[in-house]
Image 1 (cartoon, helix red, strand yellow):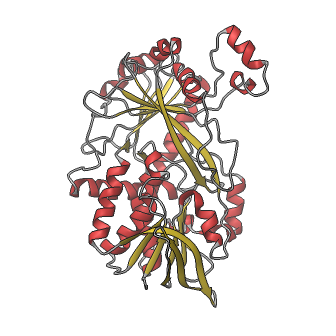
Image 2: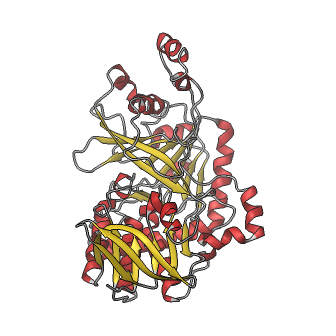
Image 3: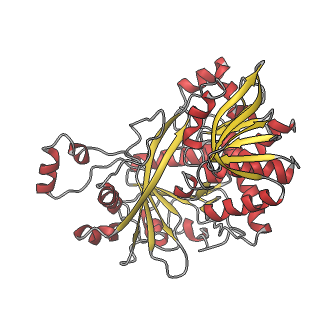
Length: 460
């Protein structure tokens, strides 16, 4: 066989790249190779949220995400919003008055970087101009952010939140959508434009004179195919580091295990119209005294009585009569994996820990602690670089490219990442942010200096 491009990985990043190459650039022979069904390793485990609100020492991530959201909105428009894109926003919250000034500083920095205008409400009367998010849809919504610094105004507009919340930053060009429907829409269009999906595993990338010449695929039917090609794309998600070694390249990647839990909110504790809500406070869980003593007595469970990291978050899932709520808390991230371990390790404590942590954010969840509701847990690996920016572009082997390290933001970044990768491959004009995501950035001494003082990586 021959191919113009072989892409390893049929997650959302690989599909978006194939779509961009075939549909927008007219590349005729694109092979999309994966031993699993499309969108089934990590893409379907996502929170499915998107945001243009990204900290950083420069504006690269904001520009990149603004472009990706532009493309998502265009896809929503052309498909009749098949993937149910909304613009509910993100709500960053805190009970710590010392953090309120930090929220404002972050908002002003994001405003300068292109995330949109910031509106600050220091009293209830100031907040009269606030425009709440609509339950569904993505048009005619405010951009930028609304910062509430008055507790009375917070209680008026976000009554389900704890009275202890002293600041709410509602970022507006944010929301969520059905990642599965987006992926299938892109895949269907890609196939119609000639993309071929091959069920199999990339076993070897042949390289001669530092150039890709062929890819060997162990197909699921038991045969082995050798595909002659000069372009190979590594879009293998959590396996990207292993796949890069097939080209003789080692990528600076590691993975973290992230879980989420879904349960039915029969008590209607969570506002069904809210956006994704984040508590930006570290906290110690409120265990009964006897339970705390028992947990503290064991080396295996003592950590549950200690200070746990900030960033616990939730959002409502579904429309109409749905009562589902998603809860997420990244207290696993201190363990880094060079390669993913499958199946995922079981964490029987996760539903209760997440629920107990979220009571500090939404007190009406407390009755569930008397009998933890039946929950569904899933998750996957966030594969990332040290500064939590993706790798998109050429490798040191001619014809080899990477499109990976989308640590929890693969769905929202997929359109712009596919566009950027295709520009590299086809020799099209590159956007200003291209170098910020190229592997070559680590060879720049000034970038290494930047890394040493990076600050927040934007990981929820």
